[in-house]
Image 1: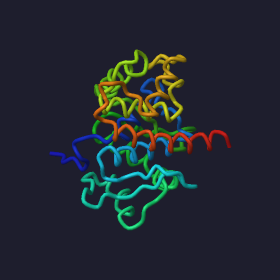
Image 2 (image 1 turned 30 degrees about the vertical axis):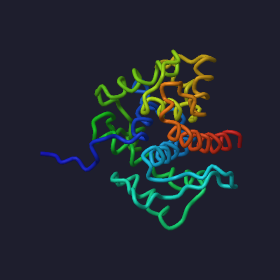
Image 3 (image 1 turned 90 degrees about the horizontal axis):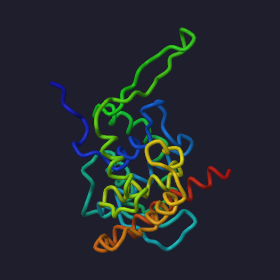
Image 4 (image 1 turned 30 degrees about the horizontal axis):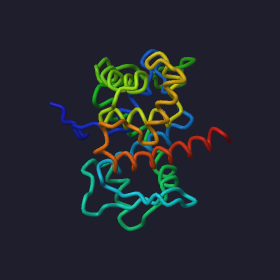
Length: 231
């Protein structure tokens, strides 16, 4: 019997990466800025689960992030990001740039272990080893799309999870590339930007603090991504 080495509940960043994965082509949308996107998702989860607090006052490296020492995350990936913040708070943008580069591989490992994505080894020209990403055949990505698509395309009020994912997809800048799964339009663009700012509708009024913190973290990710795309 194989014993799983990862927590049962998927991280927001795992679900985000799975949404960005195109099972038709085996590619991931927004590869050029992916580490900013995934790090923004990790930071968002730390905020949403109240493992960290964010001081919204602007600094050169973004809003300051501080660990809530009484509430350590159980997930080992989140814990590795959280632990250094217990002794030194850090700007959100510098934190995103620091933790982002190693996330793609770690999160793909998790998706592979869960069976959502497979890695297939190939040889180009008979000797150059390459790795292709292949759809694992689970229903997880379709379920995520069913939750996120109406939030973006139809203006439906989100659940906390679908709202976070929709906002992060928008902040990633990859929604136009996902047109086959979430039809792209000016309305989808506008809705995504509203979600980034925490505008989730009256039903989410009780989530005001969470929405404010999400707005801070997605804005930090978007600023970082824009600076790379512009350069």
